[in-house]
Structure formats: structure tokens, C-alpha cells
Image 1 (tube, rainbow, N blue to C red):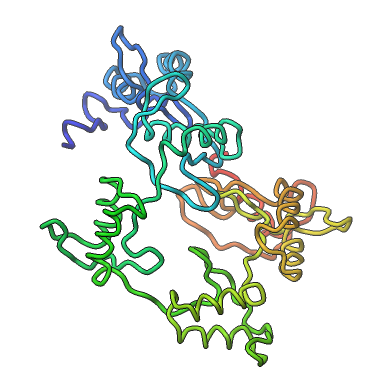
Image 2: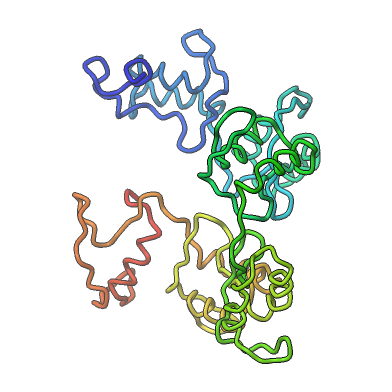
Length: 367
């Protein structure tokens, strides 16, 4: 399909790599516009501009941006709204027609709109979830439930040979088989022995999240004192879904397991460890704050963790650039050695080359 579907540098279109980009970030590919008196989608508009020789940095491209960006473009949310998210669990989307804002559409369309346009903490996201969750979202059947799925194991289902993972991920979704239904129970009964298995008990696993084990923390349990590390080794003798494992996890989790508080709550951000700031009335750095939280065992999700995130994230957290600037990267893309400890004057202050590199790492290469 390459010759039919792809437009690239050629004798007819030598500047195809310098195409006119209508949108800087998100693009609604299927929004409708009029171009040359013809209706088309924004996706088709891209090809039409290219075929008509409209390239970047030309008056024609600038006019196209003015004419079509309001329809074709949007700013993607930092934390996208998941229509079928409830608490920590994400549910599957039903293929169902619904009415939304007075228009007939389907659940997949609403899901895509919410994910590409709405912030998860915004009122619009909450209203959409409240209005449509029951109509659009369902708990998909899982062959193995809390057990492990043998992804590669081949089984015969309805006369067709397929992998356990194909049944669990594709077949269940295509047929919208709901957890707890008769059809779900029948498939589980048919393939559980072939597709499912258990693993040794891990003391500090809760749901899909693995927490840090406080290896040397002493704990008095079952009439004796041992370290959390010792209790974790003993727990591994049991299977993860056994009653003994679940009881041990429940009894020792708070004493032995820890998920540290991150200074940055948003995905796609990194921490500027050496950034100076004032914390608890004292001159500190982001690293100092992090070490303080860790020594106090402030856990992720605690009120204190959320309060500190709110207080310092604007100073400590930086968006990870797509093309990171590096102090010692030459113009041809090769990297030179960085003299980390050499001191230089930067913005009126004596700092090390390592500090300068850290500050530049939050910037885009072409900025």
C-alpha cells in the first residue's frame, strides 16, 4: 500500500518533509472542514495541502492555519479523563449508542472525546462520568481473575485454536462478555486449568501495585520477632491466592510495606533535585525535601504527601522535554565528556557544570 497511501519527497513533491502542519499538538482527524469547495476531514486536509504544494513557512500555510486550526486543533489534557475510570480501576467500554449533549453518538466516541479533550479533575469529566458510566462501561470477564494468565498457551475455543491471551483480551472484548455472567463462568470453567496458574506469595503486593519491602524493620508477629525480610521469605512458601498469603499480607502490610511519596503527582514530569527552595522555613533543595519525606515514611496518597506535593511541585517538578537539551551535545548530535565538577558563572551565580547540565535538561533542544 506504500505507493498509494504515502506521500514523500519526489520529483512532484520535493519538499514533502516540510509539510504544512495545521496543529501544533492535538488534531481531531475526523472533524469536517471545507477545502476547495469540497467537504473533507482534517486528516484528508493534510493530504490535500501536501498535494497542492502548501508547505511550512509559506503564506498559504499561514492562511490554512488561520482557516482550519479552530476546527481541527485542540490542546491535549495533561491528565486525560477516562470515562470508564472508577476509583483506581479502569473498566472496559461498551459498543453502545447513547445521547450526549442532545446528539446521538456512541460510547467509543464519548470515550475518545473525554480522553483527548477533558482534564480528569475538571467538572466536565466528572459530569460525563456520572451521566454515562452506567451506560458505557462494564467489568470485562477475565479467565483467571486474580491468578496469572499463561499468555502463550494455545487452546481450542469454539472450534478455533487461539492463545489464552487472545481469548482474554480480544474475544472477551469483541463479544462484551461481562464478569459474573453465565457466559463468563462457562469460559472460565472451560479454560481455567490450561490458561491459569499461581505464583509465590509476595508480602508487599496489593492489587497491581508492588510496594517497597522494609527489609530490616523488626516486627512481632505470631508470637515471635523477625524482620520484615524474614517474614517475606517465609511468605514465599505459600501461593499468592492462598488464605495464608492473604492473611499474612493483611497483617504485616502496614508494618513492612512502603510506597514513597513522590514530589511530582503528574505523569510526564521529572524532579529537579538541586532546585533551591524554602521548606518548613529553612533553605533546602528538592532532594532535601524528598529525603525528609522518606525518613518520615510519608506514604503516597497520605494527606501530608498531597499537601507537600501541592506546596513544592511547581518548583521541583518539570515537564520532561521530548528532545532534551544536553550541555555537551555538539551540533552534529554527538556527545562530549562533561566536566561535572568544574565551576562556571551561570546567570550571575557560580555553579558546577553538572548543575548547569541539570538545569538545561528540562529544556527542549531547539529552545
